[in-house]
Structure formats: structure tokens, C-alpha cells
Length: 476
Image (cartoon, rainbow, N blue to C red; front, side, top):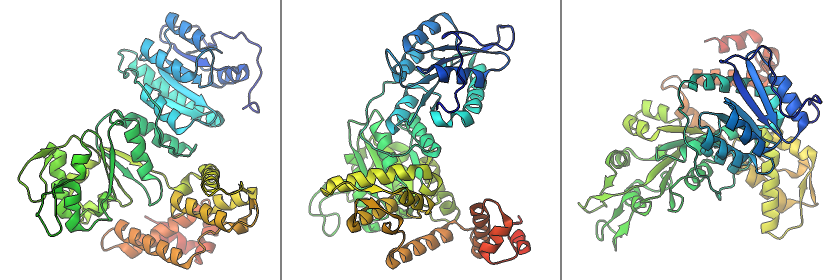
């Protein structure tokens, strides 16, 4: 951060005003141990009608809040005599309507989720502040202005440590963490969507771990991996003798998840006949085991996930519309790995350490050229493919440093065929009925232009067509 800070020898606590203070002026308090950052942020945010206060200690910030109405606090996590997370809790307890933005070098998954649960307005990485801080603060101050007449903020929440490890510092993933922090406190159904291998189950686990249900079980079930004739029994249980092979009564997943969370993975693959029965459970919380008329209640929170476009599945008649709206109360979309390439080096290093430690191997590191190669690849299999790639590279490594040639990117014909088949399946499911080929051509043209940084000439060359032909394909 020192590269863009502007030194200033001003007093530690002061107000910066571009005009005489008035009753309707807004106030920001900046809390950070680095005087250079305080100087930079003050100059960066200075505006008419804006009063900026600053301090380098958390306890001094509390004293300021006791005497002054503050609309927004911008605080670092690393503070003395207590950290920014504790300061956040104290601020929300003392002044619930005050918005708080936490800043950190590399906030962890747990920090982002915990901060959101405690009521933080946002969590930002320090290196992004020169580009994003002003717009985020302007948005927050508009919200503070709307709230000024009445306190509508939520009370502080008790946070706790979770056991889910999700690696990533990219803005898209940080936004997902914030949604997790907010939705974990409720029992609202959550639909997690994203490509295969993007980490949907990890997000489901995080929601459970940070929820009041964390002391009970998270019960996962893959709806696409169980035959239709067995899925009903798996979900709702069965009585002895209810079908061939039912040698004893068995509790289903809904009973097992009572008081906890039931995670229905690949919900888009659930047969329509089972969707009807799932809808009933969501409506009144009751069901019956296969072969029984006894009504059973279950207080299970439902989290679902799919790699399919459920709205398109509804339009095609393969998924019930009423069930879709029951499940899609909160929609969490997981960004594909190709859209968060800054996470790739962190993930690769994490997998390297875990794999070498698990197998008792000597330490292996990635060369910078190998990192560049990993970031240049599109990762159609997402994080799962990256993990498998690193595992293969470790198994075949001939030295302690991995070079680009040591990274087996899409080298298996069987794997490549699987990816092509999977891509075709997704295209058919996503394309408008009766208009598949024109839709695919249009999507291909748009994607090629985007990959060429909107250079139509280069995109046309990549496609092997003229610019005029490309423009026709791009036309609405």
C-alpha cells in the first residue's frame, strides 16, 4: 500500500471539511494504525459536505462515537488494543445505524462471513481501495442518508469459528462469502448454482457451519446419483417389507436432518415424481415413509445446488415451477474459476501443500511460468479440475520445482471427451427450444469477441470469418 500513500504531518484526530459544517453534513471515521493510510484515505475521500475524522486506535474510535454521530466507519482489522472485528461488534452495539466497512490485506473466508454476520456493510481488500473505495463509500453514505430518519439496521450477531476452508481473495468470491454471512442466520431455503466443480458443496457447508443449526448434522444427498426408484426411500425412509429388499424400517434423510440442514445436490436431476413429494415437505414440513401412512414432521433447513439453469428446466417442463420458487428464496451463484483467476495461485499452492503433506513427499513449488500457465487456462472443470491437475503434477514430478511442461492441462483424451460431452449437454439444456444452432453460433461469436478484448478484427480472424460476417452474427 505504501506505493500510493501521500505523506501528511497533520494531527492524528482531525476533521477535513470542504465547507462550513452544517447539520446535514455526513461524517466518516477512519481507523487504521498506518498514518500514511489515514492521510491517503482522507485526501481520497474529501468532498463537500463530508466531515472526516480519523484515529489509529480502536479504543479512541469508541470514544469518538460516544461524542459524535458518525454515519460510516472505515476500519482496518489489525488494530490495538483490540482488533477491527471486536470494534465492529462494539460499534453495532453502541450505534446500530452506523455503517461499518472493514479493510484488510487478505481477508479470510471466516473473516468475511463473520464480519457480515456482525453487521458489516462491506469487507474490502486494501489493494483494491484506490479503484473501489470512493464508489463503495458513496453508496454507503447514500444508504446512511436514507437511514438517518430511523434506525433500521440489524442488531449485532454473535459470531463463531467455522471449520470450512474455502480458498479465494477475488471480489466475486468475497461477494459470495458476504451472502453466506447474511443468509446463514435464517432458515430460508438457498439455491446454490454454478458449474460442476466450482465448490457448491463447500458453500453449503459454510452456510450450515455459520448457522444456529451447526450443532446438528448437515446431511448431503446427490439427487442425480440415486435411481428414481430408490430416491424416494433415501429421502423419506421406508417401512419393513414396503418393497423388495426392504428388510427393516429405515429413517430417511429428512428424519436424519431434523434440526439440522439437508443439502440436496444436483436438484435439477430430481425426477418429477419426487419433486411433487418434496414440494409437500417444503409446504408443511411433513411426509410419510414409503409403505406407511404415518405422518412425520421434520424441521430441516433445505439447501439445494445445481449446475443446470433451473429456469430453463422449468420452461422445458422438466422441473416444477412451484418447486423452483420454493427453493429459490435465496440464490447464491458461484463464479467459475476462469472468472476469478487471482485465486488460482492460492488454490494451487494450497493443493500442493495438502497433497505433498498427505503423501509424505518433499516440498514442491510452482515456478512463476507454471503459475502463468495455470492462469492462462480456462478450467472448464473449475476447482475440481485444478486439484486433479496439481495431484497429477505432483505424482509425475521429477524435481522440486514444477515448470509449465510439468502441468498436464487437458492431456487425457478420455477426460477431453468427457468435457466435450458435458459441454454439449449444457448447451442443449441452456439453448432456447427449437433455436439451438442459431443460439450456439451467437454465443460463440460473443464469447470469441470477449476473449479478444472486443477487438472485432482479431475475433473474426480467430473464427475464420470476415468482420462483416461477425457483425451479422452479433446483431440482435
